[in-house]
Amino acid sequence: MTSQALPSPAPSLADVQRKLGGCLLRLQQYEILLKDLVARSDVAAHPAQLQAVQDAQIASAHKKTLGGLVSMLTEQYLTVGEGEDSRNAPQGDDTVWVSMRFQLELDASQYQATTAALKELVALRNELVHHFLQRFNIWEPQDCIAADAYLDASYQRIDGHYQTLLGWAQNMQEVRKRVATYMNSDAFENLLLNGIAPDGTVHWPASGAVRCLREGEARFAIDGWTRLNSAITWLRTQYPEQQPQRYGCSSWRHIIHASQQFEICKRVNTEQGGREVWYRSRQE
Image 1 (spheres, rainbow, N blue to C red):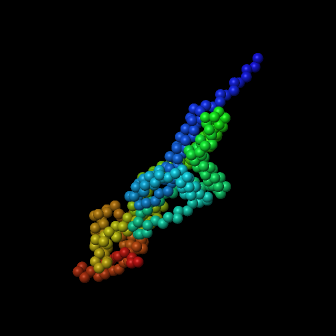
Image 2: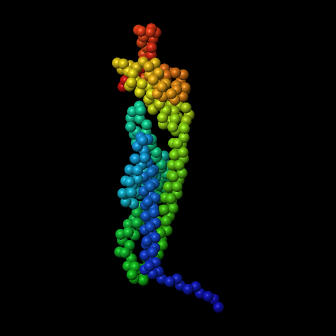
Image 3: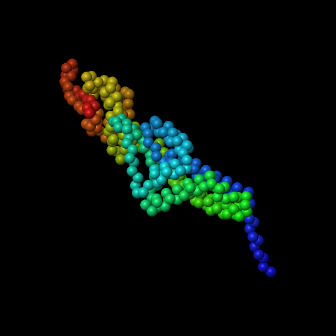
């Protein structure tokens, strides 16, 4: 005697309500994750303002709809080929500017397929939120069966998008951790404060040495020119860590020549005799 499998019971109204709730909850999880990703994927500011700018971007993202967030994702985070940073940092010799942009590079066909799938996700979300009861009269048995199958398929699509986004977010978080580790390192501090790259090259306009010389200039200038010895005496007291050797130079006069940020002249010291070096910032 063979046993026959019993037919599955027809889905109930409670089953449909539970599955609809599951879809909406997964959509909300997706939206929360997406808000965080787009808010953190691109930030640029002065170091002192970096956290405030990041917080403002997070607050702004939390006000956007899913459609708006998807547009930001496809226009800013997803890119075909190598992305380019078209932003201009503030100009100025003493400007320090931190810019971080995270992007996922796709080929043209992947980008097209991904953007199309994301648009379908937004349409599915709107269908579930605004039109589900118009499409299915879930108080009727046949519509309840159709709605149950539709929600099963919908959850699979939503969860697939969520898992993909979760992978992107985890990858970005890992990169952010590596960046944070570097930003807490001595090498980054040397780059930020002194303009010295890890390979030893110096970005003179943003260097600590040039910054100190300009400060000495502001304190001791006479008719627009500053006696170098006066500035050096002051620098040795105020900034003892700023040594020419740190920049691969033998003297402060060497720094003035190497940086090309200053003009220099020699004057006779009428009281003590001999010639002295004077400097001033290059005129525009």
